[in-house]
Image (spheres, rainbow, N blue to C red):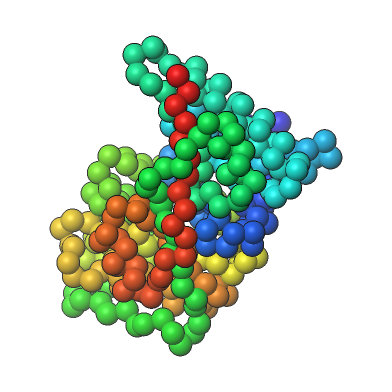
Length: 298
């Protein structure tokens, strides 16, 4: 089978499983389809090989992992005995894969999960020697309706609109300036725009008077659950402190309502007070402060 077809199949099955598991924990879920899409495609093509599905004897997916052999293994587990059995297999594999990177000079650690809430999974991790992390990526959420999203206020000279094809290079430059070290590439962004969950209407930018991308918000809609996720959003340093990030978020939320979204989700690193304040100003409140787990393997 063609490699691209196989990869597409794995991604599609993973997206279906993530969406199916969403109602178990809601905003505190380990993953939204937006996490999956952004985590996979913004590092295209390397990250596609990090996706793995763990099935039972009947072929039903019990666990999904996103793990490239480095520091963090994302883990989505179906509740129940079969899910725990598959999670045990997945952890055995992730730990041995991570331990193989040891060079004897520094401790090798493995982080598992981002917002682990399941008591079954927590007990499993504790039994294997994992400890809860003191920091994490809390989830914030808000309901959406046609009349409760504040209108976007756009500074004079700027235009808030959908991303266009001729904006791609500028969009990538804006992201890399906003998040130094991330190194997003145009080819990766093109692949991201071609993945099934991507909705052009929800890829929103603020264009500067010089037609450069000044701020951006990419949203991902899980239509089965009516939940839209912001991932990512940011502003080029040259255009900060003008309210542009808030403007693109609010506009994108308004358009999300038109597409059927009934709630919105965003996550941020727990130490980022500025991000928390921004999302609060857009109507979000903290929904989950649980963190992931960590273990020193050797």
